Amino acid sequence: RENEAINETWIADRDRFSYEGVYSPDRLQRPLVRQGEEWVEADWESALGKVAEGLRSRGGADLGVLASGSGTLEELYLLGRIARGLGTSNIDHRLRQRDFRDQSADPVFPSLGLRIAAVDSLEALLVIGSNLRREVPILAHRVRKAARRGAKIAMLNPRRFEYLFPIAAYLESAPSRQVADLAAILAAAADAAGKPVPEHLSAAVRQARVEDAHRAVATALASGEKRAVWLGALALQHPAFADLRALAAALAQVTGAACGTLAAGGNAAGAYLAGAVPHREAGGRSVHKSGLSAPEMLRSSLRAYVLFGGVEPWIDALDAESLRNLGKAEFVVALTPFASEQLRRVAHVLLPIGTFAETSGTYVNLEGLWQSQSGAVAPVGEARPGWKVLRVLGNLLDLAGFDYQSSEEVREELGRLCAGTSSAGYQGTHRVAQPPGQAALVDLPMYQVDALVRRAPSLQRTREGRAPAATY
Image (cartoon, rainbow, N blue to C red; front, side, top):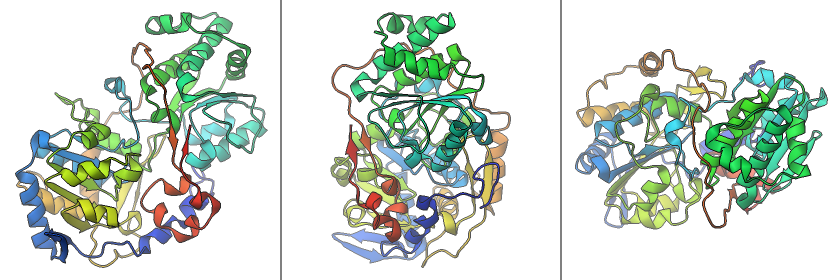
């Protein structure tokens, strides 16, 4: 939709043409139940009854729930309520993240650290681990506007990506070197500013070998008064993400910059607020005992799994072994708009839910703004909005408080739990200790990032659509 403060009426090709996936031949149009090696169509009542029975007998630590970070706030909240009602905190939407050492210090939700419209007026920006044009095109557009006005833009990336604006300093850094390079940039910035670094990072900074390339980045970030440091998708999936985040936050503190995270998925901020993470309940409340992260669930051979929102872990989690582990489970249910051959091999029940275009719901953007929509088109076949399916499933599981009559009621309940919350940014004291060995990053092409765009023919026929994943 037109929204001058956010998109200035621009829309990227990825978002313009992704709607084609709504009518993909892969669309799941009726509930399916596996009987032996055969798939049999079922009515909603019997299919949901089988799901309730399968989950009720395999709850607690034996159950894992993997969610799409592009689900609506209402869907993710109800999914989290069901998971915890079944006695597990094994729920996660962070499918590509690998380092969770410092997750207890996560902000209430990931954010940009400033308003989207304020990006235009930035005077200095450091982007760490992000192919910005492909990850968040509307931000790349605004960064270009800032650069054309004289902002100094610096990059720390595993390779040199193409940008349509001038770059003041570009440090090409192999994944295994990125922590050391960022520590050196912090050392250079602190020295130039005459400020101390936080005590918990002092050892890492003392060991840093500062070179001219690091000073160039630090100098660029010191320009002007309106500054920002962003961590992108490649930083998020780095095996030493906790180290990168701690150093980036300290660098922001030393230079007076805002520190933000460009989280993957269309509703990653909403997923945090809704409790679709193993260490937080809805509203950002800490859990007594954290559950398993997404990669831990896929490695743990649990008895049962729930895959929600078109999640395809063998692609979305960059984990080819996930098919084998899911195939060992006693019970796998997928609430999904799509049913690929791979999914049919591992699942036991497939429940058809609507895409974003077929449901009402709410999304939380990178500045923390809640934006609600109504469904634009009728669901395909017998598909139902995800929140409605979860509401009925909660009742069949005899969980209290699942008598919602509308998605608005779900949103209002979560809104009360989130009242007064804000993303204060990272406030942790993580000590940098880069893991030994080589680090590698897999960069998923922009037209492969979720189940919907993977099924948009116009996107898949492009050069970007045919491009393989890159490994750095």
